[in-house]
Length: 382
Ligand code: PLP
Image 1 (cartoon, rainbow, N blue to C red):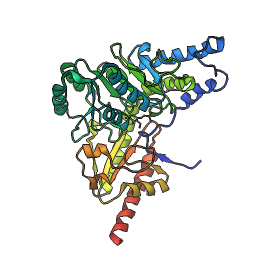
Image 2: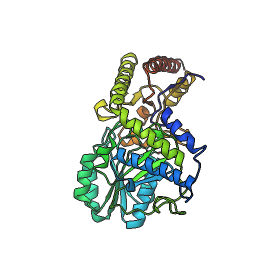
Image 3: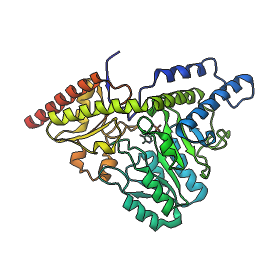
Image 4: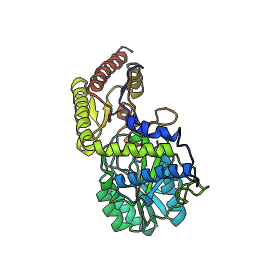
């Protein structure tokens, strides 16, 4: 197989081998539908229940609060549209949310609150928004970790503000980018609801998790057979859910060592790039973001051209978040942070993770330094 230097863990993570192996029996011998009543179905149900118990424990909620969905996007959509459908009012979110939150909030006539220059929700603006909205704010959704620039939100401060000014509101966090870097038990203590996606923590694609605290009233998005206690219909993806539980267990077990190791690799990568290339800067200070995030703007370089050259050399990176078209839309996150369009057009996201090695960092540095040099020489000739 061709060797790739994979620095796009924020788009998706390579699966843990153990997660793949845990899934295999459920494609093969244990293929029964867990909603049935015969012995094979009961075995599948047992696997589902065990996975739910394990996941609940790792998040710090009760098993009854865990709802399995088809992806992180579905979890976000369900919570926002489901709360508005059930209790009315309007949702609130930050301007740097993933479109999986931003679009349903806008669709429901919600309010989008600006962010500070690091991409974290601006607490003063949140405070005045909630004060103005009074009891009409029924759901507030603020991401735990930004998928583009890697900023960590101070959810304790957000929670304190929401409880004080909008005690009726459900506080939700899109924590899809969090599990590799942050202890989910600490997050679950301060929110009512959380979205996760297994493919961002070494598990399979097609498995989302939504936690719904005991007081959350939320209508289902998908109606049908009444699975997940009527909160999300559709036959369970047993293999995927078992794989997700295994992956979350490994993520939790290895997190503290992994964070330190990856931070060292990220710091070396960024320090050398800043030292070797003129006109490179980090968009967010390192102490405000996750260990695996390197987000840079490079003067005089179009990120699309740079990513093309990097891809030719086997280095997988990205500019903004991955989107269905693969097209490079201007980043709403960078715009909300106040980064001008010219600088934003030279943005690159190098996202490291559990498989990143020293050799990856060496290859990435060489490829980026060479490619930026080529692009700048090309510009000065043309
Ligand atoms: N929320 C965030 C912060 C994300 O990064 C992503 C995926 O990139 C999603 C939601 C959507 O998750 P999924 O790909 O499982 O639909």
